[in-house]
Image (cartoon, rainbow, N blue to C red; front, top):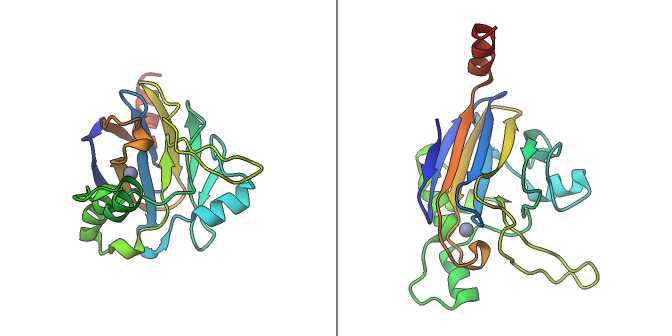
Length: 206
Ligand SMILES: [Zn+2]
C-alpha cells in the first residue's frame, strides 16, 4: 500500500530485515531525506562517511550498500530509476534556513521533521546523522570541490528501492528546502514491500 508524506513533513517506521522500501517521487523534482538506525540498538546509524569510503564514490545507486557507523550493512539499493542522490549534505534545518536563505522565521526543515518523527523511538535531534538524500542533485566540481544544489533529475513516477540488511528504524521526509526541490514543495510516496507476501502471491498465481 502506498503511503503519502505531505509536503515539508516527515515520518518514521520500522523496516524488517529482508523487507524493501520503495521511495517514489510522484510529481518529480522532489527530495526525500532518509536516515536509518539499527532497530535493536539505535546508537548504530546510517553513515555517509563509511558508505562513501567503502563504495569509493559519492553517488550511490543500484548494487551499492549503505553502511552504519559500525560498518555493518544497513540497506542495499536494488533498483534506481534516477541514479543521482546526495550523501554529503545534512538534513535542512531552521538554522540552515537562517544561514543560507536568510529566513527570519524559518521552517524546522527535514531535521525538525525527522526529530519529531523519531522522538517516540527515543532518538534526539543531535543523534540524527547526515541523511541519504534521495533524488537530491548535488554536482561537485572535480577540480575545485565546489558544490551546487541543482533541481533533482527525478521525473514523476521515478523511484528507488532499498532492501533492509538488518531490522531497521527508518526516518523519511518530503524535503523542505527550496533549492533542493526547484522551489516547489511536493509530497513523497513510499511503499513497504514484504517479500513473504510477494512470494506467497507468486505461489497462489502458479
Ligand atoms: Zn530537507
